Image (cartoon, rainbow, N blue to C red; front, side, top):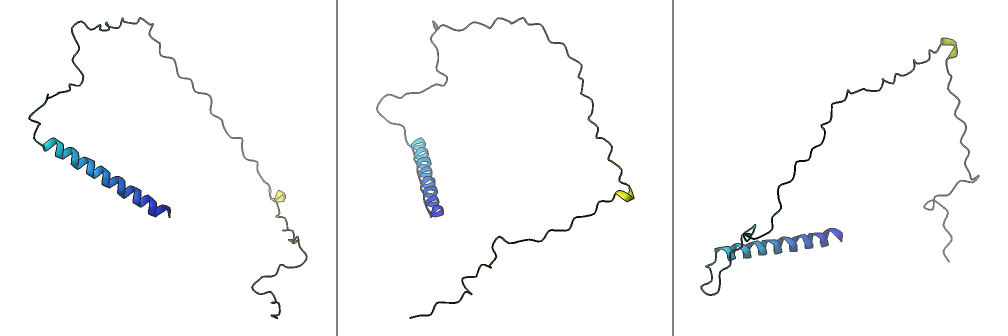
Length: 118
């Protein structure tokens, strides 16, 4: 269900984008209007001569930083691995016997005896 609705929405969005693009191209290629006032927008717009402008930023005098010596912390070395002697060999433990929580076995419903039909 999700895939079909997503596909429909994607197809509708693609169709609208294509239609909008085609309308924009057709508008650009059409003849300009013969009546009315033509408007040209300049970006950025021209500013009038008496517009208040910001002055240059005063140079900020700050003392320059001196380079510091990079000091790394000492390396963390691993302690030496303990040596195991032949008489200290670790023997594996015997796996304990698994005890089930229920005494009776759970029956498989497919193999359980069926009730007699009346």
